Amino acid sequence: FYATADQDRNLGFGGLDGRGRKKQDPPIIRDLLLSLEDCYHGAVKKIKISRRVMNDDGITSSIREKILSITVKRGWLPGTKVTFEGEGDQGPNTIPSDLVFVVKDKPHTHLRRENTDLIYTAKINLGQALTGTTLHIEHLDGRKLDVPINEIVKPGYKKRIPGQGMPMMTNPDKFGDMIIEFDVEYPNGLNSDQKLYIKEALINNQP
Amino acid sequence: FYATADQDRNLGFGGLDGRGRKKQDPPIIRDLLLSLEDCYHGAVKKIKISRRVMNDDGITSSIREKILSITVKRGWLPGTKVTFEGEGDQGPNTIPSDLVFVVKDKPHTHLRRENTDLIYTAKINLGQALTGTTLHIEHLDGRKLDVPINEIVKPGYKKRIPGQGMPMMTNPDKFGDMIIEFDVEYPNGLNSDQKLYIKEALINNQP
Image 1 (spheres, one colour):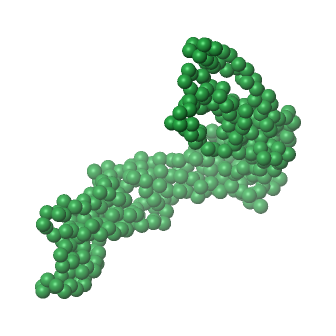
Image 2 (cartoon, chains in turn red, brown):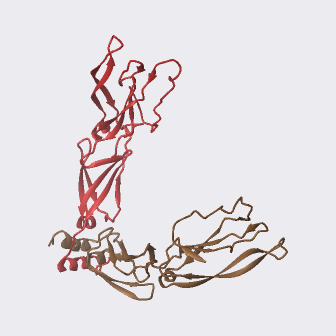
Image 3 (cartoon, one colour):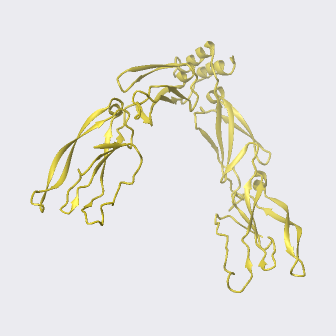
């Protein structure tokens, strides 16, 4: 098989057609759901397929199962295509179609990716956003990243940790970044004591 | 003249064409910049135009100035069209084109509109967002609206004041709403005293 990373959706129909040769059916496209861990470490995936093959008589056909093996390389991006030539259904008068798998991300518990960057959404409360906190983020290889947040987390603020993203497809020894987004929980109401402290901090006590 | 509020950009070419009658040039489109006050109260606008008109000899032409008067009705929306038929340039063999004015909003110091709603952006600091404040908003007719903000202003929060928007074009005795958006200024840093007060308010002192 071969893998391609381009976005080309022109799946190569025709070419054999109308020249007295057998016609090939259009490729069969299937999702290849991969976890972020698979694409971080690399993996070998076994996929069972059922396909119609022609019997020796050349007239009748039967369904046969087959195991395909896909070697997932580090850094494979969503949209990466893996093509098995001629592994689609066989008909009496056609060349078996190609079987194409297209990489798609399985949802992860707390990370997602944008190209080579990993995105983590930190849920913190307003007190932590203003006075600081430390995040403990479990990475795809099991490492715990301790990320101190000492800056004030304003709406829309993102913290970038260089080199803690996904390996790059073109050079898996290089990595994207981790980007931390913040989902800050605000109190729904404050009592008069709380308001006094807030005023003391933010209105009466300007540095 | 006549005014239309529809979004129809089909400006009525042809119809006279090819039937042995004079041809009409396509309409001349011009912006009619109006202040929100003009559209709130209604107004009369005088506009000086220069146009080419044919002289009596039917061969030569000259530029003549003319004052057009437009009565702006309460609630006119951006995109409202005012058409002066035949007030465009005259040519020797053409019917003068129509002159079409299209209403566009002049920027206002502190208000803008979305359909019949008026949008006000309140700049407040985080202390005010958490402990409350009162806004003083000058309306288009000079009234000062005092708007108490007692709720906690979370990111994205909008406050709607019914009936304090623009008059409606179809019924100028009815009004849209005023919508208050908030631009909350966060401190860039907090000293240790300020952090203690914030912790007291938001972490140690949960209601």
